[in-house]
Length: 346
Ligand code: NCD
Ligand code: ZN
Image (tube, rainbow, N blue to C red; front, side):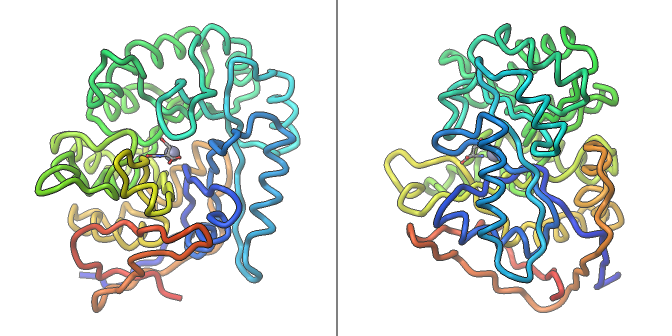
């Protein structure tokens, strides 16, 4: 049994960095391990133009501590008034790497998302033409659809029709949480990929609700039944190039999580790699961890894998901080509920 594992340096293909004080506090947690990340645009107000993405990228670069090396890959928040010409121009100069589709009201800060998918047809056609990936939050928002069914219904009612109507559109179905999502990506051909978070490999819905409500395990899409967690584990550890890591690390200060109406999001940047090594070892798939964290994502995004590497070693339990301090208040680090023996060597 190997106690040492060297991987190409990983990337995070779905990350929330926020802005201001929270950005400053959480950015080093990602930059310590990850070389690049697809940065979500759901700020308040959202990042909707190329100029705003460029300004946000500047703020991220300015917040990066000296000596750390990290490349933010920016996204635009798709709205019904997004201008295809702005998208094309921002992609051409490398300001953006993808466009993000939030169905209106699906999750945190998604009020400006898309209601009428016909109204974004022009943007999607432009994206198909230039090969720019669409990152999709795959949940319907209809009040009559049960929250645990929203991903499966989204595939049938929204995602599949969009893909049929827009041939060549390259889609990342983000943070898939169901067997339906796994099956759709697996059978969807070269133009679709799926990201999987670390926490959806750990949690099922019981973990959120049994024995008391656990606000730090509440995220969107919400964790589903155990059979779905097992399907995600099988997909992530399969080596199938369609699946790669997007942590969806989504910091909210504790006051906003531990509340009568708590925000969705798990903050996982700090210990994701350590927990993933644990999961892949449990599944007998440590030899496929690098594909998931470091190779499949760049291949889909048509970027080279990182040239440098990281080393994970297994030993005594690692004590990760329980919380990260920010000027806005503490943020709780995801607790997997079991000891972590894998650490990223300095
Ligand atoms: C994200 C956030 O907090 O911005 N929350 C989450 O539960 N994942 C939004 C999102 O990606 O859905
Ligand atoms: Zn997210």
